Image 1 (cartoon, helix red, strand yellow):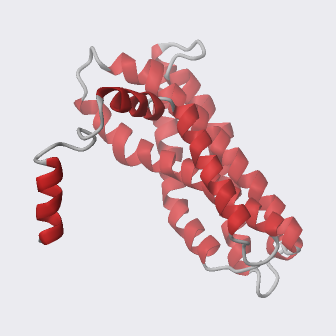
Image 2 (cartoon, one colour):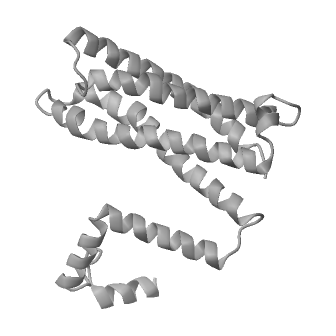
Image 3 (cartoon, rainbow, N blue to C red):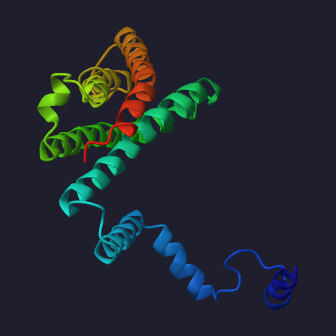
Length: 214
């Protein structure tokens, strides 16, 4: 209570950042408004942590696990964005506003969605090969069935992204030429396989989280 009262005495009822001068607020707004600067700051912070506190085990393996997790969070995060936010909300959006989603937001999200999926798979394979369990996992040998199932599920999901969802979305969004009937069918196809990936994602998460292969 005393600390809170002291803070109010010093800063009054100011809103966050109001204690900064106008120039300071403008500088912060410019920084946080620049995604490239924010990502660069995040990378610098991560590198400082990696350099300052040694990881458990091999450093190269730790970096690839970090990258794998980062790309995976982006991939599945966007999958959940499509399924829990965009698709359920689209019917509620006024017709005159829907082109903004279809022409700008969805294509940008799909770009990061498909490349995050690819990067997740590539880094995951590198981890499995480097740790020496790729063959055992893909052949479902005892002790590696769990990660094997997780890897197969991830590969199926990534295949769906690149060879089903993305081609269908290109037609549905008008990125490639298609008539109205084809657009409607493609939108349905993309939705169905996106929901398939959502179904597979929880089992995939369980398999990945509960296997410790180094």
